[in-house]
Length: 288
Image (cartoon, rainbow, N blue to C red):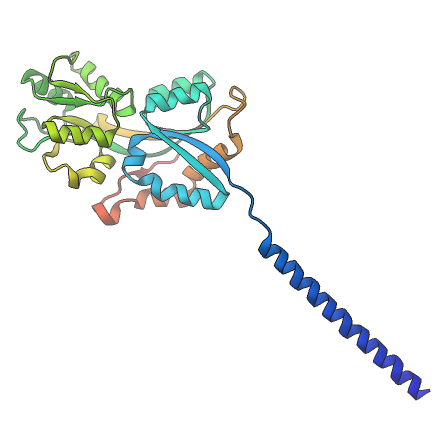
């Protein structure tokens, strides 16, 4: 009887050992399967934005964070704000990051854009040749534009319907001047390239402060001549292209991007961008 009980106990013990080994093998195989399971292919999000967000280097900092967190590959198309907004009206982009409030509002009113949120701001400044041949200074950009036009100093305009170009044209309108002539030079290019042309030609140019700070070390013939005016705030908004009007857009990731841009962690990254290198933020967080 004792002998039978001994063998029964031994049999149960062996079964437990075999079961444990089996479970161990299963767990190992499961872990190996997880290791070898291929990662899902990232989705693609088309971002139409201004050249200033690219030329300043901001996108190089924030986009990798968004891509990693959401398994999304962002395709950036950096153009003037006018061209970026036009892409929105045609459904050629999924999300927009731009800085021409009046034109943005028109896009929302037309139903081409939704979920518009304020992200950040900096300011516009007027820079000019190191010798400041027109003798302009202070905070009054309208007075400065009048003086530059009167003395026929070179003025470089982007001429690309960008947010900066729209702002510049508004100042000329306030000065009751329609700029023409050989001294009014249109580049049709982005902010960084236009600053380089102003540097080469010794001309005056309106620019956003972020691009100026990022490019200043290469602009040895230019300096800030007018800044600080109340009318020189430069506000950036992010918005989705409306999927109900443009059914081919990636609305899911566009919505994620809008929320990402106004998230407090992203806002802190934006505010800290440039502080170490330039001693000041290139953009200031400005959420609603």
